[in-house]
Image 1 (spheres, protein in one colour):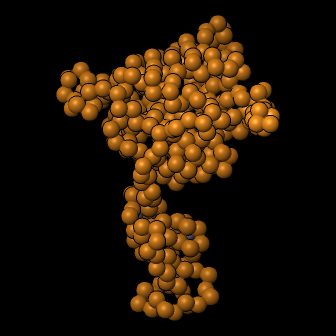
Image 2 (cartoon, helix red, strand yellow; image 1 turned 90 degrees about the horizontal axis):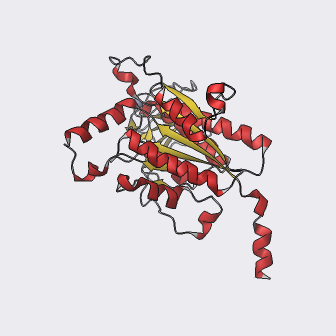
Image 3 (cartoon, protein in one colour; image 1 turned 180 degrees about the vertical axis):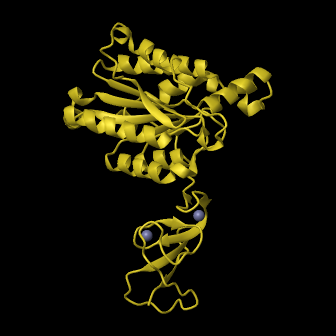
Length: 318
Ligand SMILES: [Zn+2]
Ligand SMILES: [Zn+2]
């Protein structure tokens, strides 16, 4: 019987989800957007940009809809700020009488409105990037903690991004992505800026998540409800937006810049933009002889030149 086989596959009691939302709260990105919107100097593509407060309204509709889907659904909201990430919900001060009476929505908004902006040093140019990798690690840790208590729960992560990628975070972000992939946690990405995020493209591609760049941000709620609300099981039956091209380029470990062609350490797989006689990550010493490509021996330490995936050449030590 067809009905029986479907019933076997779905355990009605096990469709509770754990949704972890990571919100990019970089005040420079949002502040800049607000300033441009006030000046009215945005081009047609960016005309549909929304302010942070409008974004929060859309987000709250989404959160409420998610919580109404199943009363056992669990939620966590994280914000990645400049140099720091923290939980907005659930928060550790839940026993605080200030919080116990409040709804989830009020708790999240209260946290955001009382964000500590004093420790941001404006003059420090390097320090204006969001700590996305930290937020991602916290999300993964939180998920594994909840999974221990409720093994049947279906976790997923939704990332709202406005700031550009920080190539210095490449290694830690990739480690998080691989960790999510291994635990089959889909990473859904909602990009609220015009530029694509290489990190998040790779994250959603590797974890079977959704990568979406809403064309009209003023209708964000509609995008959220129709794309990010649906649980991982139901997604199998729906036609989901797919990514046509993913930017797979990696950052070099030495300068943290994105490279098309580079050198890879054969021992630890570190990527470098320039040839050096030893690997700065694991300390392996190379004696590369590019002029003698035929001489392949049984040595352990080889350096592989990568480029575009298939046109690799190998040179080995003696
Ligand atoms: Zn480099
Ligand atoms: Zn190495």
